[in-house]
Structures are given as C-alpha cells and as structure tokens.
Image: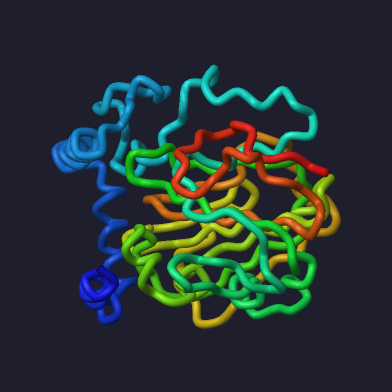
Length: 285
C-alpha cells in the first residue's frame, strides 16, 4: 500500500506547482457564465456540496467559481459553544491529526513528522512557546466551507508568509511526503489569547490560488523567495472567538498550535472525525 501511494505522489515532485496554481487562479476567477457555471455545477455534483447551507443558493448569482468556493454560510448556522472556556473549531472539515507536540515535533502521518521551527518559518523564537504543547490539523475538502474563523478571542502579534512547494494535502500525499506541511507555502498567524500564544497556520496546496486574511487581504500570491513577516503592535487586530480570520481560495489545511498545559482537546475530537465550524473541540485550562 505504501509503495502504491508513493507512485501516485511521485509526479507531484516534478510538476510546476506555482505555474499550475496561477493557471487555476485565472480559471476560477473567470466571470464567463458558461465556464463558471460548468465548474460550479460539476463540483456540487461530484462532491455533494450542501447548497442549502449557503447564503446564496443559486449558482447563477455567483460572479465566478472562486466566489462560489468562498461562499458565505447562512448566518444562523454554526453557533458558538455555550461553554465560556470552549475552544471553537476554526473550519468545516476533517481532523487529519490531533495530539501533543513532542518537544518541537508535530506528528504528520505514518511515521512522518515536522518541526514547529520549520513550520513557523525557521524561527526558534516563534517555535519556543509551543514546545510540548498541543496541535490539531484540519483538512478542508472541496465540498467544505472555505472561510476560517477564530478558535479563541485573540490579538494578532505577527503574520509570517513562508515560501514553499504546493503539494496536494490529501490523505495519500500526507501519508507519503515527509514534512509536507512544513514544505508547502503557508501563512502563519500568531495570536495572544487567554490560553497564551496560539498559532493558526494556513497551508497552501496545489491549485490553491491564494490565501488571504481579513486584516491584510490577499497574502499569497505573489510567490516569494524568502520569508516575509509583519509585526503588529499599535492598533493590532483583535478578533473574537468565531469571527472570520481568513480564507482559502481553493481548499487546503489549517494547523492550530497551543502551548504546554494551556488547553485540552475534547475526548471526541479525534483523527478522521468530521468537524463543523465553531463546534467545541477543546477547552482552556
């Protein structure tokens, strides 16, 4: 099985990831009615998208495929947890992994892992608060809502754009490519919260045309050669639990990091569990 998965992933090593993503961006932003309606209808059919949850249900009302892909939900859906100490799920999706950060190492899948040092852009200062802390990795499939929301109320301290490849983040690739999430292009958002430092890492993937945040707008593209970062001190953005913080223009993965002994995951929040935005997934200690 492992050899079969490796052969499936092998072509991704030589594909021009960013060029393909730029092409996909042009297609997904096309406002040609025939093109965008064909794309939208095929995705809805193939992935069984539940349009009854969307604020806009008529596919003709979307300007482009990307407008559909980043669609809003009806406002009464996905209520916040009642528990005042709750940590809310940041996305609709499936739990890829959840657990403890061992030293500075995060488990990926099938004996593969990556470090918080690499994940957060090669900075020991950024990684240190999460030593022996807790993490969760949530995968957003094409059928899911693709806006990301705050697990806790927090004040933004730093945003980091880390260059990298754009491997797929599906199960087969995650099981096969070493250090996948610390190799792909990503945007790391570091917040101060009641549970101490919290990192939200928005990981790009092949055909992900861009990642954006509510305070900055589009962060990527452009593709870059070196890490760039933004520090927030005066008038730093402060977002409440459950508020939108960013979005994927096409699907990918969000990784959440907390420090040691700051929180605990719910016992039912496990690998492969299907989760919904704002549901309770843990609690602040």
